Length: 107
Length: 114
Image 1 (cartoon, one colour):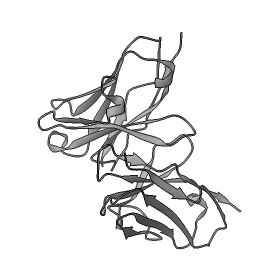
Image 2: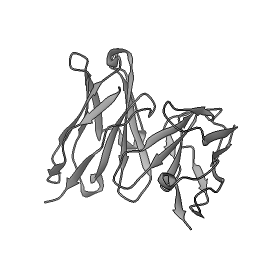
Image 3: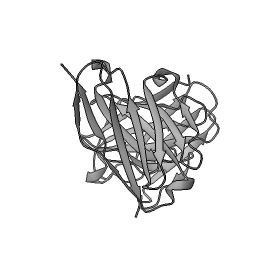
Image 4: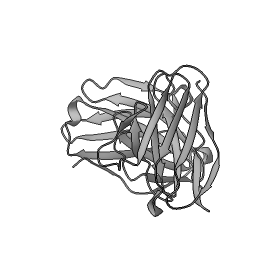
């Protein structure tokens, strides 16, 4: 199975900050990497699909980049509603797998 | 708009089975894929498998083969997941999601307890 390693596990930041979340795959997953935001008690919400495509309705402060094994999610200017847990997900090879998540908390 | 409405919370006894439903609207279900996921609260997410509504073709995470069975009813645009021989390790929130995880249901908590 492909292992997805997210870093950091916890990120403390302030409103207005620019933050970068990382996700590393144990083998090449091409472009098949999604990013999700999950708040407590809610379903995950798709933010970015296939590395760098913004899902409909998601603010443009979210962006994704990377290829192969190394990927990033950038939030250009944190808003109060962005404090949540973020997961990366590879859908290149079965079984599809998630990272352990990055919890973005208010500093 | 796209909606996925899952059935309500379940409390089941060890060894029993449960069938979860996911009713969809707002897109063409009959030519779409549906994925299912498991999440123990406070932990990450696992991919259980997916089904193509067009022909019922399925793909499973080996970990869940024999545990989960995915089916669809295209007449009602509803997807189902049967979970069998339940143990306490199956207690979790289960989500359905369109495609490879585009739009998600609200999740259903399954608690396995005697």
